[in-house]
Length: 286
Ligand code: PZK
Image (cartoon, rainbow, N blue to C red; front, side, top):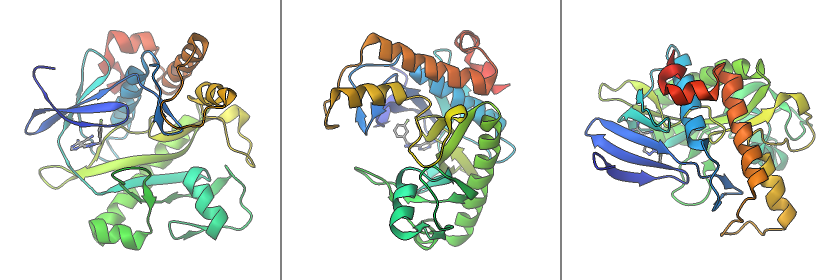
């Protein structure tokens, strides 16, 4: 990457600086499970996620402007406008899972939202809820209530961020459900551009930033299988691995099954074949 300076690493992505106004986000084929990055790549995973994110950016431009400037020919790299990112994670939940289920079980509330009694794990919520979290430097993000979120970004901006996050989730979850994928929850990252315009950044509505569940086996009262990572989780559980690093290597059939699930999610949502994407990544933008 001689044209760009590396500025940050995520668990499975890297960011480079192209110039003072533009970044390059590169999605690797690495996969994490139980918060550990595994030593085995899933071929094309980074391309699937980059393409899906681009697809959603194009489809949600009328809801909120976004940072996407171009998709590169490699299919895994996004040129993006540099933003001043807000210090909160904008989480929306339509179903009760993960830390939402945990907090509800303990208190009957999630981030200050009082929920109906007797909800079960994975139940659909009466309405999607905005449940912001702080960006923890290490370890897990911490759920916060709207009062704390308002201290971090200001009350006026928070109201706009909440409205946009809920609208994005509603549009995407409805679209995906028609294609057999339930988006149980999702995390957006918003920032301000040079003019102060609220703008959607990061990746959006991918299986790495959301919980994707297969709709055809949805059954509240238990945890749901992950649309994309279930083979990996089942295999790791079968080993009795203690979920501390290093993670196990994956056998070829688990790699192939998982790659097929990522490609299936891409093809169901975009109505393109993954080969169409590889031939012309920007096909997802029209
Ligand atoms: C930005 N991250 C998260 C970390 C990743 C992503 N458009 C933007 N402007 C300024 N900063 C960011 C973005 C975006 N997107 C996003 N950190 C900074 C992150 C590591 C790897 F790919």
